[in-house]
Length: 525
Image (cartoon, rainbow, N blue to C red; front, side, top):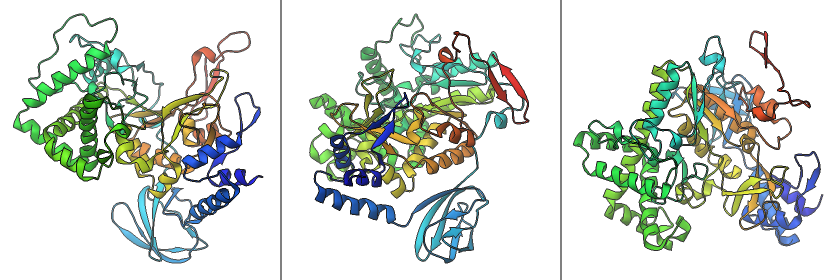
């Protein structure tokens, strides 16, 4: 193994990989150097590689600050034996003994704290599997449609669908016996920029797309004039029109509603306040100079904790409060849609969609850029459907930062997706195992796979699934990593199949054997 490949392996990069056709591929050295440089591990000379190897190996040798395990299984906490204190999530604590670096199995699921020798280790103790269909529905088989929220229409004649039209749609399907409605992503976008309406390139996955907020949620709100909606959505006109309508509503809020908004803001804390400030700043600099992301703002405003941002939040308090109100309104609308589903008898209700990454110029990257891969785009390697590979222009979580931060941003992201849903679809679920990362400006073919902390992330998903009593679906289409679907099955994470491709050599649909938990077979044609 070359020195460069040693460094790549230490950094979690795969110098060699297998393509969709089963052929072995090797990442070019120059591509590896560019990716390593973006990861903060310079590799432009042998001396630089040796120094970076020391850095990478030292980081891996650090005692863990976060450990995950299954309920009842021994927990490996690294070196160190003796007495320790286990503090459970509910605040209770007990003395425990570490033997050969292992804590005896913990029976209580949740996020706990182990204190040993003055060192704190956060523990995530997970159920062995996610919530399943059998857990939410006794007997029978479930069905439900998948919908794109903006495409939904109702009698209000709105230019695009929102959480109000979603509630109406859910109600209609519930009366026809559906148990679930899968929806397009509802992540926060860039409300001031009508050209950025793709739900798969969000500003933040921890907040909502406020353009889907339903003004009619509030009592006395003026609904849109009924009429025939346009055949196609004119985003360039529809988004500004909706924003003007919502601003008028905000300017005339009753005191009782303002109090509700303030209570919501207090519960959500500083993350919401800074997200609202980002939206206000984005609108300001987009209008002033056409700046699309925070990297294009004046330097003083690129620091969310700096004096310039603090002054803006004070001077433009009303505008920032407007964006807080929009999050409150969107949250109330999505919550109502899920309540409509469950009140209508749906076993699951909404199945939310978790996009695989975020726009590097968005709110999350501005506020918590250390969470993310900087200078790298995630995508997909060359395959028969995309022979040149794909670079999606979005970024994702840095695996090293996840471990260092106790997976806090990942946990918050999963919780946000499940806040008002009975299920979660994880787009490009292979990203839980590995991400194809491409240096900014490079060809998508000049990427490499970066390992993710798969076991930890799967346990967190199982734990959050039980907390929300929600099913989890992994979009497992494409170049499948070895053992990935087996790991999904072990965690009871559901998969996806495209009916069009489920055919044999004669073009006939392939019958599948479905085995229920009692061991009975049911042939599904």
